[in-house]
Image (cartoon, rainbow, N blue to C red; front, top):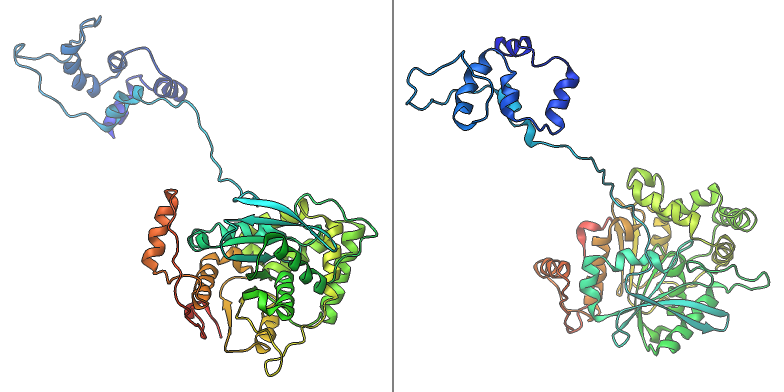
Length: 435
């Protein structure tokens, strides 16, 4: 403390601004001249070091001399304050750059090729991802979305390891793709059964004989309808938040209000809140604020309100699937998935009670409402095990999956192998299921 006072009294620290300029801004003067301005103990301690190395010194130091001029000076201890002053000229603050993480957004890139397919009710857009010579997976989206909602999930590293032996066909409902123009006023939007029938045109266009269905919400209902009418064309179904019965009075009233608002006023706050509840359940901002903001922005900027109102009208007028466990039900294997925080849990329970327990599995994923976005690892693992049960892929151990992740990061791929048929009649992921 006394030493610090000596430095202050020595006249070196005349003002804070002088200290800042002398330590931050590069100074052409040498450290020696700066030390010469020090007073007291600092001057006595540091003079010997610079007598030997500085030849052009103009000021002779007389306060501290050596008794033996031949003997080299011994090193003397330097305080922390003096050490800081000595090294200040080596530090230069040029600028400050702030880096913010890039905001999440949908991207329709992901290796997909959009193809327009002609149907009896107009053209629809199908996005193809993968080699068309491989087995087909057909996806169908939910209300307010299109095929880009599947991109984050199918580009997930575990799904890329699985989809080496598959080709994915993302089907968009009429007028629901990004940048779609408003449908004509006299256009009669297809019913849910007619939307399911349009899949026949997709199969014929690409030469697909059988496929694996992967649907969410309204898309899950459409795929289930197609499997009831054409079971020979469907190998298996993975359905998320699937509804098997017709709309109730409360849902009918809300959806009618939303449809009317979309037609007359566009994407209002009420419609936006309903879509967020439909996909995420209650209080989604508390779970993932960035994800919910991305979806809010997408609904506001990318959705055609008029076309969405027509799809909502078709969905709210849906008929009951007319299936029962004891009599007529879906014949193909079904993986029935929902999120614990989803508002459609009861609908999936009802749907599960109408399926054959020998070839169906019901899963409720914890801590999620929109499972594809909030729990992609669990869904990809469940889907992989489901396909293993149908004989499509060989079992992949966690060690092999980890190795593939490393190879995938390096830009390389490891193909999967086919295996004999292995039937799965129980939940494949016990820790992810809440019965």
